[in-house]
Length: 480
Ligand code: UDX
Ligand code: UDX
Ligand code: ADP
Picture 1: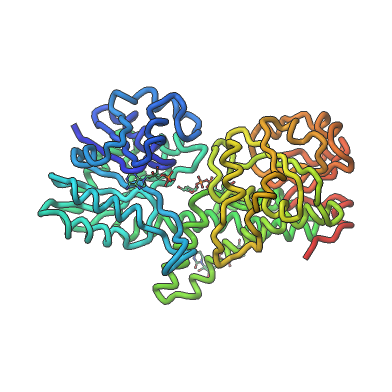
Picture 2: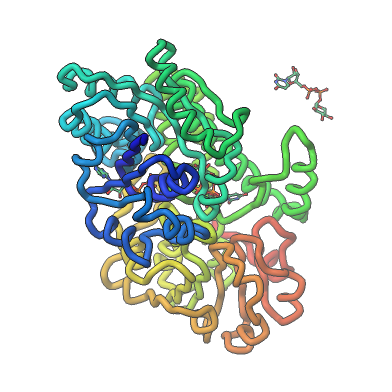
């Protein structure tokens, strides 16, 4: 029986390994992590991450051929294939701070693998890493290996949160990069055999190591670039009277462009896009390619611009001040169907409104109060794309209430901001909400989920990203 061990039981490692175990009953999969609470949660009925379909998959195989454990060394030493799926945040200090990936967790995992291994292994990079990381890992492994052979593969994960299980069941492609030596190719084949249990052959792509590593950064950069492109258009739509949804639809009908990932929004979030682009920028700079670096930086600048623009629009519409006004925040996660708040645009919008002394009442169906308070008080590292936002002081924390219902959040509010596209926000009783709000009642839809015409009929003053402006908003010049 082939034994797989995955180091890191996070958003990537957990669901990916659960699906491998589900699809490959003949393979034993152990997911290990140094975090005791995480592993405890994986072994309980309250999984540590919210992901549609995940519960069912875990229930089916946990205890059968899927195990979650903190005994990292035991499971690594027994495994034939070791996936490394630890976190690779952006460095916050030292050389490359604010851009380069922090490989501390990766390096420590690699050293541990070398220390505990007694037999040859395939080591698979699952977390997104800078190009050429495999080379560094190879060096650590071979210099510490006591003669044991390691083959390094790059197998980047393309799942998106909220649709992880579906993405894993039916991936557009699985990418495996390996050395072009006979041993390297043998390792590629061994990993390919795992995926071949359920992924059609023509969807399993094999490349060299560097192409696989770079493809992951490139794919995320291209996806983020589409959002920044449509978000840049949304500003122009508002200025000209065009409707961004109509423009996106017309543009996406061109089969060379395609319809997906063209939804204008308050900005992209998530743990990957910004981190991977900053990383790409850093790699370009290190390779003497400042023009290429500049090109990709602009994707992040437009994203920051979109978030600030949204805050400015709110403040300017509400008579240039939100001081002491109650604003309801509907949605805090970085997208629907996840409780994840990493890099969520909601943080920047909330901190911006708090800076103008607003009182916030926040509701998200999946994010806990603890998480929201932590996100809003955290000392955000000052990237080289500052948003000019200050983290909250303990005094400002009092300006934030987290509630468990959209009606409670909006009661007596002056304005509503929709920051995550949760389905339930489409079917709220907006008449009831309107009746319980201060007048004039404002809605700022950062995700284009509400029916603008219907809400205007109820009496709301509605701002929806990239849509023709209300007469009211036209008369209120945006703040500079
Ligand atoms: C373009 C648009 O495609 C068309 O829809 C619009 O109506 C007019 O402008 P055209 O300029 O005739 O059409 O040709 P196109 O096939 O788009 O190529 C434009 C340039 O891009 C060419 O120099 C082509 O060689 C180059 N190109 C195209 C690339 O370098 N790489 C590609 O992948 C595609
Ligand atoms: C992304 C990639 O999609 C995935 O392939 C990769 O493995 C990890 O990074 P994820 O961050 O989980 O996945 O979610 P994604 O659906 O890509 O959304 C990222 C952000 O972009 C979200 O904040 C989302 O709301 C925003 N977005 C997405 C838009 O604003 N408009 C769109 O059209 C699509
Ligand atoms: P991702 O979104 O990439 O999955 P997460 O932060 O959700 O990232 O998960 C990474 C996990 O890796 C965390 O649970 C963390 O505790 C774990 N981890 C980091 N370093 C190690 C290590 N050396 N050994 C075991 N687990 C580790």
